[in-house]
Image (cartoon, rainbow, N blue to C red; front, side):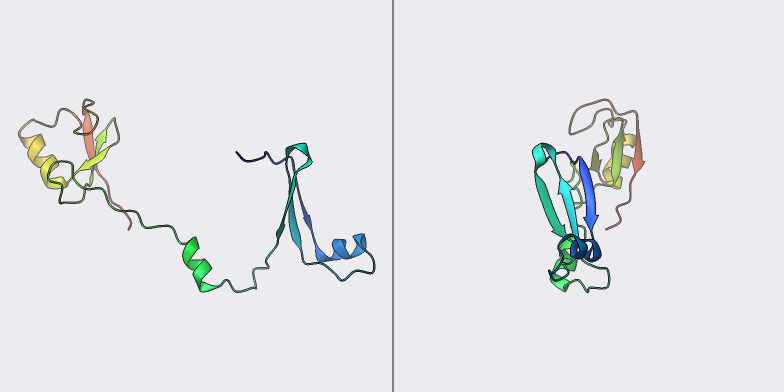
Length: 123
């Protein structure tokens, strides 16, 4: 459980140097104060500092596997069922079930299907 932030402040090198005369200027920090007086201090990294490539890779969104069709189990699912919201049918199986008037219930949750839409994943 995270502490609720009650106060956020940024201390720059100039204010740190004036707060502690005679000391070398400190690097900028970000201070997060939580309940009960707890405090976390994070260094502020200027935008001009290059980010190492291994860290850049961690910032990229993780690729997620595309859902498979619940009927044929081989094609990627691209049809969303309304109102349950499950994306669980490929286009071919959805058309076949619609044509045979068998697309009455979601194959995952068994809720009634009112309509369908095709979805496109930006992968």
